[in-house]
Amino acid sequence: MGLANSLLKDEEGSITGAWCLADTDLALMLNRLVLNGDDVPKNLERYAKRQWERASVQRWVKQQRKTKMTDNRGLTTTCTRTRAEAARAG
Image 1 (cartoon, rainbow, N blue to C red):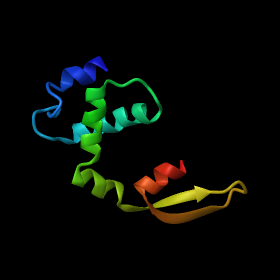
Image 2: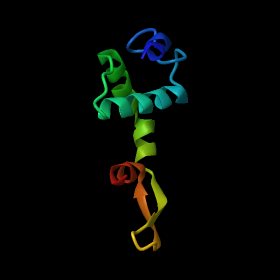
Image 3: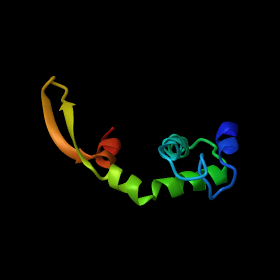
């Protein structure tokens, strides 16, 4: 957490001063910790939430993609779903 805190000079900021893809990468990593119940400083939780709420990130999450799924019999099918749906399905 110390590295993340050192990269973010203030709570409203971003890693480089202006938004960049690294902000989304960091937010995804922090959100994994938060969602798994790990202790994450409140300022980093808020930062991750703000990044996740960005319109561009939400468009990416909601994009359709093809996913191959294999059932317990070894049969493979392809379905189309969003990244969010795929994440919930595991």
